[in-house]
Length: 388
Image 1 (cartoon, rainbow, N blue to C red):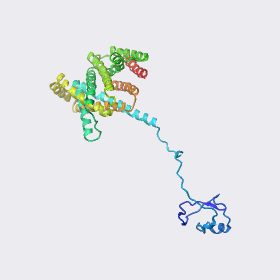
Image 2: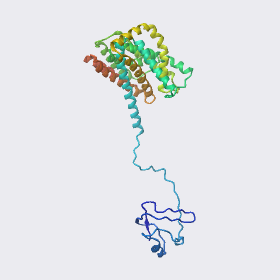
Image 3: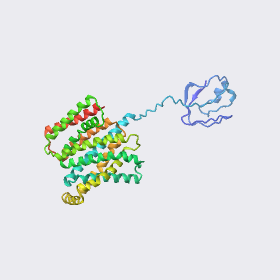
Image 4: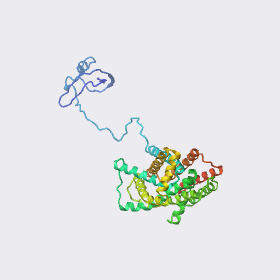
């Protein structure tokens, strides 16, 4: 009986094409398992196999049976056990959403801080809003020209459906900036947390949509919390309050027009917001000139630079860049997440902005005012759950 011989490295190579070639092994190891049977010639055992001599086949006639070498394809139905853990697809998606939210919130907080600094030194919200749109439009034009981002393929119908969205976006943007120029950032965002109430009312009376009872009930803490925060606000201003309310209404119509007009349009979220910014800039510029004008801007700019110094220019650039970036990320996130998840993320965003602005600007706030804000934000969360 022969013992199987296992070389530690390539001991021999065999070519079966009518003849058998031999090569000298480097080292032989023996296994107790027999691999060759029915060999009756005893001289074959004693002469052929040796641990001191190279293994070779003296004669092919010593074998009673024909040896055939066949190649078999690996069974692909059985997975390889390689112990390599691949990331779960759902886990990767959750991580991606988390990155979107963290970036969105951080950019929004930074924008609100610099925007308020600019408005405190330069109280011209119409020009500030125009610069924000102009900066974003310029950034996207450069990205398209340098092929950093692919330019969207649009037609006349696209711009027609985008026009009412741009009008609503322009009104909401300017109204929110006017509000923040008159009141604290925290108060503006507390009032803007009441946007779901406007959404339900507009959808119900203008679009004929109906909602289940829990949705209507979730509006009670939203309206009650906003009212409590408004009447207890230490630095209440009617212009700031109305600006936040108009912004809520305008953004509700923007969302409605966007959903109706963009069905079937193959434009990414990033390019969609870029086109929206450009059209809003065209709409806003003549109104900004008519309301404020270059003379007021020049005088206000000189006054701001003399009081703040060169840092004022950086503030203006920062608020313009971060405004575009946070909106761009929010529209990009809509391509990846559901509207419900986006609504919850928007609620959490307002909490982060309110808390950050109170800390940075040392905004005085009464306990009852904080309670009203908490009730309104909690109602927004209930609304998002009931809407689902």
